[in-house]
Length: 116
Image 1 (cartoon, rainbow, N blue to C red):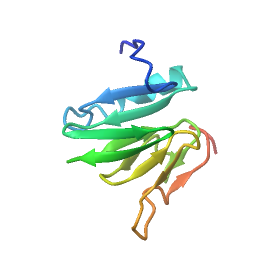
Image 2 (tube, helix red, strand yellow):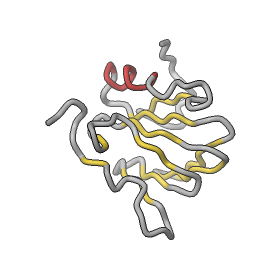
Image 3 (cartoon, helix red, strand yellow):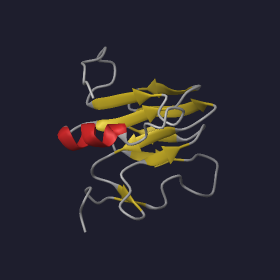
Image 4 (tube, rainbow, N blue to C red):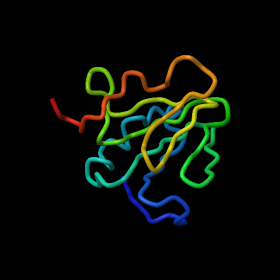
């Protein structure tokens, strides 16, 4: 996988696109393992994030995947999904699902990848 500097609007972030449509949801794992300071954001087809200051909201038809090497899910999963309407704080690296009773990241644990 080739890593290139982007336009600089989002700093310390690695972004991939069309991940679910093209079955590439694991591609950012090796990028984040090689560059653990980065937050991985994978945006599926017909989906976008609207960024305002240190927060973004997911809009569109599909999902955004978050790769944070300091967080795991359930069985040591390395990414989790955000649905349209979900929000993410880039400063605290925490997700929220406004107006709904269940957080999108109930099963996310602040535990480094590969940690026990």
